[in-house]
Length: 92
Image (cartoon, rainbow, N blue to C red):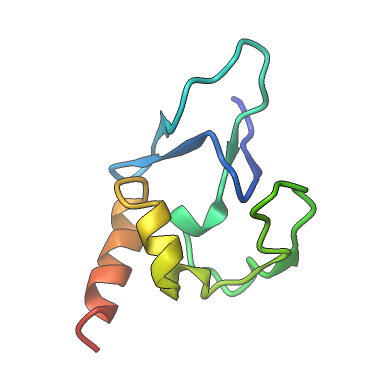
């Protein structure tokens, strides 16, 4: 099984509930990275980000999904669970 590390500039997202899908072309041997915000809102996903990308959020929180820019960036790449959370909160 291949592990996917966090990055604020990921190359994979989620399709459906658990399928991983490429967000861009991935080079042979390139590490698979995903933004954990597309898969969960677990309170334990609060950590200092060390991805070093130009658009790094620097600190990842369990509420990052609430930001409209995050929702726009990952539209179509959220798990079904996270998309339902987002949809339910649009009307709150």
